[in-house]
Every structure is written in structure tokens, then in C-alpha cells.
Length: 546
Image (cartoon, rainbow, N blue to C red):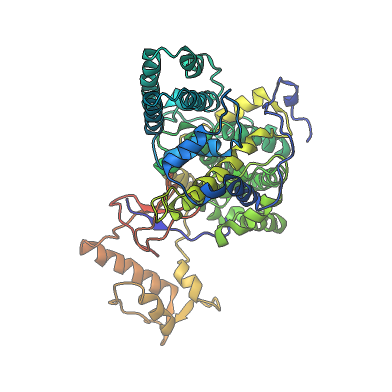
């Protein structure tokens, strides 16, 4: 699939009685302590875990790691050492081996212990399996291969008449567990399902709107489980990962909604008012430390369908543009999102990260470090690093947002964001509001510094050097100078000749959001960013850099 990298510019008062409705709260497990703001928390945690693992931290065979996990239990089934290795192995093992294959290795150890008449080891193996079932029961709920292998193990234990062992590895309670994760249904496109772009925008103040957007964002973010992050690593995309698909769809939906809300107003003055209101929403989102929705809102305001509206921009006050500049600088991808990372690291308590940035970090770490060391041992350092990065994201779900939400408004806002507009339709609306200005070609404007309506022959040659045609007679009116009309005629004639030769411009590039790691076809560079990371040719899927 052709892709083209895109340069990034560093992208409460009562409301008609809306507060009277029932309140909706997102409950979260009580956090023992506020989340630290130290920027190197993951590194500190990883260092402590490396120390606790001793010699295993330098690398170990898979058999050594499994044996160490089994030996973590005493004869009564209690943990006799830190559970850190257990946590890392049972959450991150899929990087090196499937869950079903890991269980097969454990079953082989159980059979070997039976053959050697080692009841103590058999019991410890069952304690290990019980811990796996108890702490990570969702794996047995979701992984058909693991479930099938577990059934084989249960049959083996039952055939040997080990009643205690059978009870320890019983999985029937899993089906009775509260399925609190509530699987999200996959988003299905329905182009016939178009609604008004807003059912409540005019009736909410910026603070109230930002709070309800944050409520929806956190509700989506907290559904992403440890396994979802792990699946993203293994598959390198969000396909077959509905909770992440839903989160990304929400972010894109907010960005599109922002664009449509601006474009829904008929006059430049009214569009500017909507633009200003969304800047105020962005400021409130920043105060709430909701960086993911902040990225979506600013991304919508900076989208080319909005930024091209010069008449609208003329009605936006300087101070509003200054705030926009500060926000785009904060969210800029420059230096690997350095400004965002510093701001995010300083935040305490509730915060929602820019998910795409942290998913990129996971992929980068996953690709940069080998699964195995030169001596064939498992790279435990890699497992620990990935575990800590994912665990840090999961821990954020434990701190609920400091706000209440009106259930009726949440429902209406959800409907407003449920939009089905294509990029082409948004651009059509943008051009309908403010048509293209053909009277001032940008190439001419960029070279006519004194605004006298002429450019020099030397300046024209710089322009012509970028194009494959040099056959038009120029400079008809003034010696050494070329007028606006002449350069317009040059491009019109060139386009006509190019078309007659069957050499029509071969690409139709459009801004594109990529849901999995993607590289530029021209320079082979990674397309950084969260949304609208690059351009893709809609016609022949071919690309080249600018």
C-alpha cells in the first residue's frame, strides 16, 4: 500500500437545566497512593524488579523461567518469594511462546514428576496453574487453544485419580465470573447513517463539554486490558482488537466532529465563533489532563479542511491563535513528542495519555530488543521493559476522573460523535464554504515579494525547474519580468499538453490515518503520529516524497 510521509506542524454555568439529569460515575478501584509524577517511574520499577530477579534478569532459558515460577510456591500453595516473575511470565510469555504451548511445557513437567514419583512437585505445578487461572482467568476465556489444552490436562489429572489436583486446576468458576470487561462490538461502517453534526453543542459551555468528552474518553480507555496491549504487540495492529479499535474510532470521531461543527456554520464569523469555542474546550481538556481528547480536538482544528478557511481565520482573535500555537507546540511530534512527554510526566493523579504515542513506544521497544540473547536465553530485560510500560498504562485506569457526567448528555454526545462522513465529503463542504481562489497561484505569491504583480525571469526558472515542461513562451509584456497572467497561462498550457500525452498526474494523495505501524514507500521512514500520519494515493496506491 503506497504511503507518503507528511511533515507535521507542531499540530460552568448552568445550561438550560442540563445538570438536573441523573449522574453517571465511573467507579475505579481505590488507589493506595496517587500516581507518581517522576518521569522515569517505569525505569525505576524495572530496575527494582531486575534486582529482585537476581541472576535470571541477565537472561534465562524458558525452562529455567518456568521452573522458577513453579518454585515460587511452598507445599501449602503460598508464595514463598516475590510474585514479580510470575506476573511478568504470565502476562508477557506470548512474546516468545503461545499460552497453549506454555501450558504444554508445564504438562510435560507434571508427567515427568508423576513418572519420578514426585508428589510435591506435582502439587507445586498445580498451585502454579491455579495462580494462572485465578489471576489471569481472562486468558482462558479468550484463548480457545489454551482452553483446549487445559481440558487435556484436566483429563490427565483426573485419570490419575488426583482429587486435590483436580480441584486446584478447575476452571468451571471462570464461566461464573462477572464479565466486567464487556467486550466492545466491532465498529461497522454505515454510510447511510448520517446525523446532524451536533445535538447539543450550542447548549453546553466549554467546561461542561470538555468534562463529558473526558468521561467518554476514560470510559473507552479503561476498557483496554493488559491482554489488548499484548495482542497489539504480537499482531502489530488493532485488527481483531475491538477495544482498541473503539478507542481509536472515538478519537477520530471527535476530530471529525470538530471539523464538521466548524463547517456547519454558514458565515465566516459564525465559523470563527465555533473555532474559538473549541479552543476553549481544548484549554479545559488540558486542565483535566486529558491529552488524548486534546490531541483529537487540536487535530480537528488543524486539519487542512479547516486551516484553509482564510476568511474564517480572519475573524479569529490573535490571542486565540496564540493559544492554538501553544497547543500545537505541546502536541508536536518534534523530538519524539518531547514537549508532551515532559508535560505528561509532570501530571499527577488522573490523566489520560495520548494512546498512539505510547503504543508507538511499545512497538519501538518490541522491535528494538531481541527476544533471545546471543546464548539462546530469553531476553528477560525485554519482557520486564514491555511489562512495565503496559502496566503503567493499565494503572492509570485505577484513578477515576474528578467529575460527574449527566447520563442524558453522555447519550446525546455519543450520538453526535457517531458520524459517517468521508474525507471527500468534508473537503466538499469546506470548499463549498470557501471556494478555492484561483486568482492568486501560491507559487506566484511566494515569489512576488514586493507584491507588484511580476516576478523575475530568474525566479521563474526556479519554479520551472521543478516541473517537466519548459515550452511556453514567457515574458511577453515586460522585458525580464513575468506577470501573474503569464504564469497562470504557463500552468494551464502545461497541464493541457501533459494530459494530451496521456501523462495525467499519476497520484491522488489524501491524508490518511494508519491503524498499524506504517513506513513511507519513498524514504522508508516510519510514519510518526496518532492521526493523519501521512498521505496515500487513492488511485494506484503508489507514493513518493515531496
